[in-house]
View 1: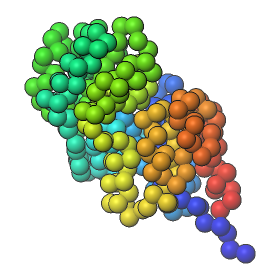
View 2 (view 1 turned 180 degrees about the vertical axis):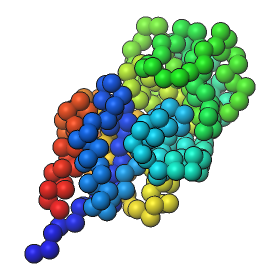
View 3 (view 1 turned 90 degrees about the horizontal axis):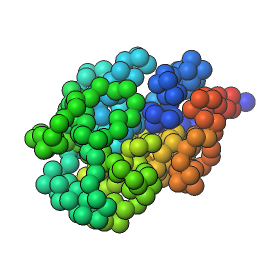
Length: 270
């Protein structure tokens, strides 16, 4: 009997909490599993909420030269050529309106923002609690955030937790902008209708791969559209309950090589 081929042509992985461990590294086991999957005919594509400037270091470390989906789907990036293939920016006037409506409902918010472009800065406003140790520009006045095109805004509340803030934002301004929670302390304002699935579908079209040929891995609610788009969604053991609820299966955590566990099983059947 001839061997069964690897069942997917596209392996889509989130970064933080999924491909990356807590120390922001990728295990050798996971690297080897991804290499074996690509040798079996699949394409590995990173799909992350991080903008390109916060993703490039990881791509370089992987020796990744393909297409990556960054900025919650707003950026499709050619890592080999170091250029953006597509980019969607936030309507700053609409975002400002949404922000003022939300603050009228829940009180003042701390802000950060991701500027568009391959070298776009992440701007951190007063009171915003930075997540991780990534390069950023710190501002004394948030008014300067709005002076150049943005991919997204980050919002934090002094009292509301992530789930409560995201819920309040969706209820208050969900018809103007999209709201996603992409990690601990990270609630984002995005262009309405923009999701990881938006960018992944564009990238897949370039690669001539279909949703029915895709397996996706993730850990947070912002991965839900990607799971719904792909043929099979795999949540990490450390994933948010909302993502686990729509996942096709749950693997081990990002600290326990959850991606490798699934890929090795599929490769063993191939």
